[in-house]
Length: 140
Image (cartoon, rainbow, N blue to C red):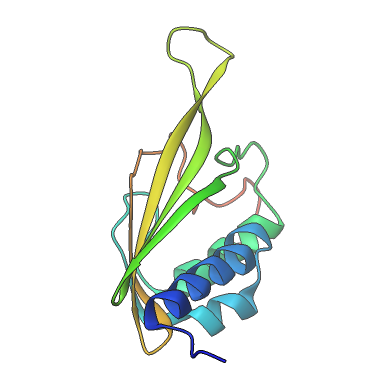
């Protein structure tokens, strides 16, 4: 049996993280796949593993009125050394036809070290309402 290459292992870690953290909202997945010194290069999410732990809480119990981004469907992963790029298909709001969408593509890029994700970049679009805003009437 052939050993898994670094690139294959890193791609698997990224896809397993996506399933656990983003789709399932698993705090355990954050601790397993995200490095404590995680750096986020996106305008909607601050850096730090603690921020992703908070995000999983919001995924499992979204604030009233929060509209999550459209579901991303995997198109391809590209891995080279410690970097993994994931390309997704994701419906986008059509600016010409209000209320309709069109199939667009998005990407996420990750840097891994020792089997954990340490950095993330994406094709960021600023959200109208931050994911981190507290729910009205929620505790301080």
